[in-house]
Image 1 (cartoon, rainbow over the protein chains, first blue to last red):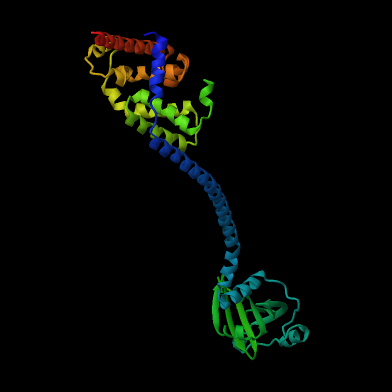
Image 2 (cartoon, each protein chain N blue to C red):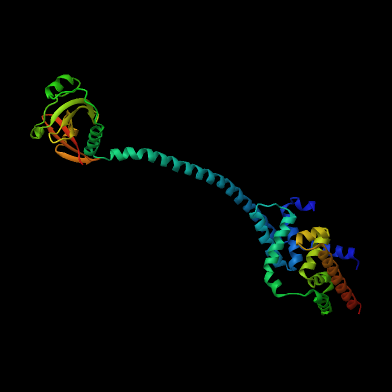
Length: 201
Length: 164
């Protein structure tokens, strides 16, 4: 048998070998379903990636918003007593010069016309013999107030705040709070809300 | 081997793959199993639908499936001729009409059948077969020569028996 004849016989032999129709159909269907699956995965893969990107962006945005809002909520989470005490202590620590220099409440009442109340000496402070040195305008919780500078006979400067009493401030009557080494004491007398700030050492 | 890059119709490609698997296994069921595994792998990889790619997938699955057998059955090259003689001297009860060639091919080693198939049926050159099967070209030519020789001897032997 020559090589050529042998090769022809081999070709003929293998051409008779065919995949059964059932197997052929099965594998063609495999190809079809796999192709659909790949297309679906490519499609969903794209959207999945988009979703991941959007999700990451959303998380970053939420984080930034949270960082911005935390101080706001932190403050709003404070009680009224804490908020007033923080405001009073801050102004006390600034030690700003008085705009109206006087040792008389009567004088202050006459010159501080923007106040909607008349500054007055507190009965509670009478026994302490604090000396008035002057006053300036300020505000407590958005309401106009007088910031009066007092000097203690034993030394030390105190700041007394007076503002018109309202329902909100009324609940702080006779309450104390210490913040940043400043002791804040609140009380009310004759329609005036008083808040005294003293540095403690 | 420009032909291998051509994308074929799936049914035609599968028939090519099946015949190649038959040349390796010489068994219809095993060939079908191997082809199916290889086809699935090709599909998962997203193609290409080329003969060379499918043949490569079929071949690697065949080698994996027969790794254990190949490891156990080690044939020393010096003994090959002797083994061939033994195989060809074996009394084979075959039906001529049923296919002398079929039985002759069954007497060949997998590698010899594979090379003969790729050369005669698929029309690959020795160099192309060397690339596909990762063997030196000289080995391919040797396998081709040895395969043909075995078949010729087997057929001659069969013819002599018939004449008697």
